[in-house]
Length: 168
Image (cartoon, rainbow, N blue to C red; front, top):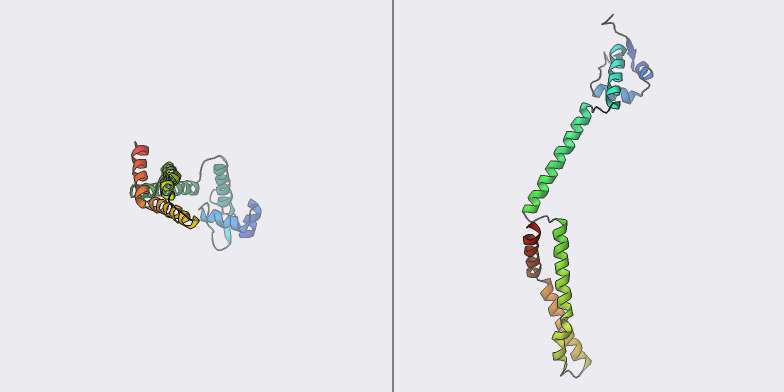
């Protein structure tokens, strides 16, 4: 009786298990059982296999498909971390605290330079006779400040200071 086959159609197996045809296909893909021939299954093999599978998955023991997916996820995460570390070493990726530090440094530099404009321009305005002259001198000083601030040298200096201070 051990080798007795209890042949059932796909529809009968679905009814026995209380599942859809797609679920039966998934069980076959998982390798729980195989059809005897097209659309015919051995219920004596299929039902115990599905029961064992359901016990295993409901008990918290991962299936091989789940462990494979977990391994793939871990491998992908490790690869992404390695890519990010390589990009960081190449200077293509900065840590968040570095960006905040550099941006803060740039803002401090900008503030200081803009606040120095009145002191720098005031002596030049003493001899001015018209509003147009005053406006031109103020405008020139503002443009000089903005040109100075837009030079990459200032940002590079802050970046070098950042790397030295935050990596230490």
